[in-house]
Length: 401
View 1 (cartoon, helix red, strand yellow):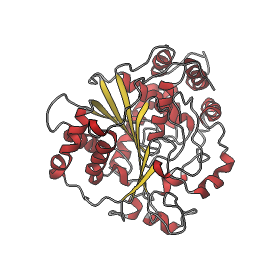
View 2 (view 1 turned 180 degrees about the vertical axis):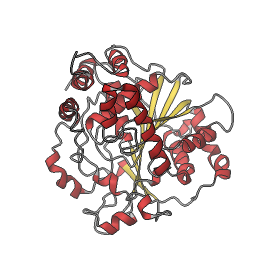
View 3 (view 1 turned 135 degrees about the vertical axis):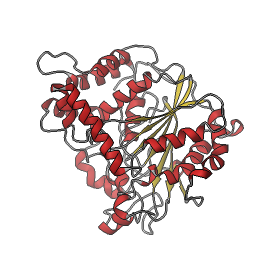
């Protein structure tokens, strides 16, 4: 995808061999007491690259309101709806723990690792969104993520490193398009999603966060003039395109195990029940959750359903949902942009029901050392081996859809 991608969707086809790499790690499992020792070199590279903060974004169904019901209640009774959203997230954290979910313990361990040698503090934040499985839920999450980034008071100038699991990675893709699109395309997004935030009675924007972010997105100047974004996704289905003027450093991790009768980058389709339970060929959810698998927003909000249909025309233009079966049969795992690491994480070490078809392994604490070392070596190599990157982060040009 180009700079000023303007919300173009990724296409499903055959990736170039240069876009991906097959790897099989061997230095696992992780132990708490070995964290500092095994990540010291990676931390030095991250600090030399001037990373000033790390944001962790969870995926679908482990958020605050996966069905969109509590948000609807919050329009009627704000304290009650917000309390239910917080309680729902706390309950899911207790049940899921680190299975496909970034936990406070994970964030604390990562923060301890990147600050082990002193120097300017690198904060690590968790970001929670609804976890709804549709365009509107992810667009709403991207708006709230933008708001949290602008309110991050600890953040000093430098690089912001974002990790997104599952569709949390697609929130990041939307964010890059919001930051990199021209003013006119931003206005189209604002007009499309504003219908969702309007209260049916007085047509006033009901959401305080959206009111502030709408004003921010309408400005002509760059929103983050002192920062650059580095994006890492884990098990993210191939969906929205990336604006490479914003995500100048982009890396994808995908749990993948080769099979004999397909290309090295392809997953077999359809996976059998046994393949799903044993993650025989890797992450089944990443393979299956592509364009055409969205859920519909709650039936209790016609406004949400209408906004989602309008977002579909913006975010999935040119990719027909009825072609889902054709795209699934292609077995694609590799994103159009960035570098994809097809990682053989091996056999699940935990109960089969807990690894969620190979999709939950990325957020396990036992893989933190491996992921941190790979991110540092791929995104922040020594200066003498690093390729030059674009000097302009956020562009406000005139090319539109």
